[in-house]
Image (cartoon, rainbow, N blue to C red; front, side, top):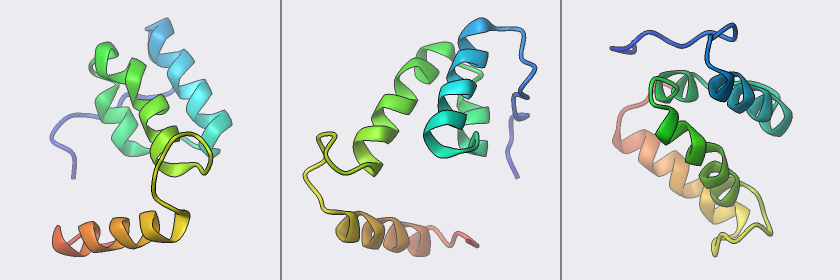
Length: 83
């Protein structure tokens, strides 16, 4: 459970709405983590570009998709994530 409320799609900030629209185009959804980070527009401006580099092939990440997936699974397990 988040300690901060999730920012919803109808946020009053144009920056937040634009970031959510970009996330929907890029991922097909807005992740709950992004909804929490949306409390800070400064963080939000850099979050999606960072996520793109980390997750998509050919955008600058030095790791292949399999290694990235294994790293995400390992970090999730170490942090006892339920998913």
